[in-house]
Length: 403
Image 1 (tube, rainbow, N blue to C red):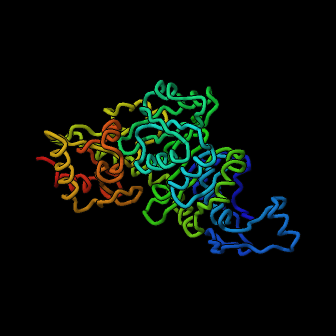
Image 2 (cartoon, rainbow, N blue to C red):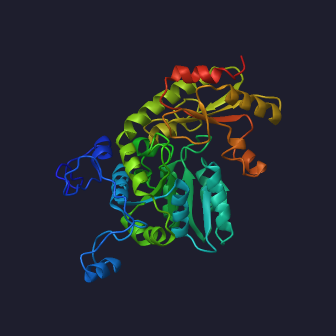
Image 3 (cartoon, rainbow, N blue to C red):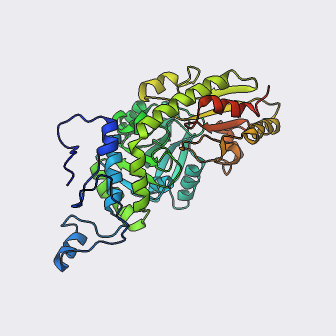
């Protein structure tokens, strides 16, 4: 056992300490860094021991599809940061959302989701429509619209906050109160903020999901996801999905992600500082119609963001002017093509700044009318601000902006 850290004792450990120390269970070798258990299966002491473990009557690992010591380290560390009772790691952020859907819904059920979510999330919910699970979309920032959309067969409310790509902020306390009144689950995608900036469970959410691929890793190295919540939900409802469907995180990826968590707070603070500087600069540029970033005073939910977040995060969006959609798209692509420093990629969560045109990439498969209703126009660009010097980021963006 680890002799240096016990997160169950009475010491009031802070987030930065938990990010470095939580989840470690040393082997007899006394390693200081977390080991990687690259094994598909685990041996048993005897036939009786094997039978007891398979029956759930004895603790221990059986098969890495549904349990691995390295993966467990990541799960316990992330759970400590989010203030969750338990967690399960998954192969990707999308497999995390899929696992939640399978765990909470069946044919004939209904989901309420915010309009402003990742395009692939919408495609996943559309896919579940084939199996009799219907989804209604509502404006993120309108709690009354959420409540009005709830039906007797509604099983969950799902949102991202801040949203992708418009950085809208949802009122988690208000939505949690609505969910509890109706006896349904509030599920929050905490990808953009991470627990370093926001802890949805403390604000009343029931379940948190992550694309660990993004800021939990922080350097664009591996794919992963996670689901967190109460021990009852994770062990009784989610664990069967993970065990039998197999959306498994690899031990190597779990090790990389555990190491990423060690620097999470430091990185997210610097991401937020850099992004705010870039956002303020963009507001002063000709041809930029609006800049959307939660820590800007001009953001529609600025006060709410200050109340429930500890920083604005790395992601901002800005919209360019133009006579029509064709010109706005041309102007947006000119900015992208002018970049020599920013990476042209739809991924985010990296130390390297990235830029993308959501209408033709992340949200390109959405019907155009749905995309417009969600506020994702042809002139919109999303930038995930990295850890480069913010002056260099601004200089790079200026190459393609109107002068």
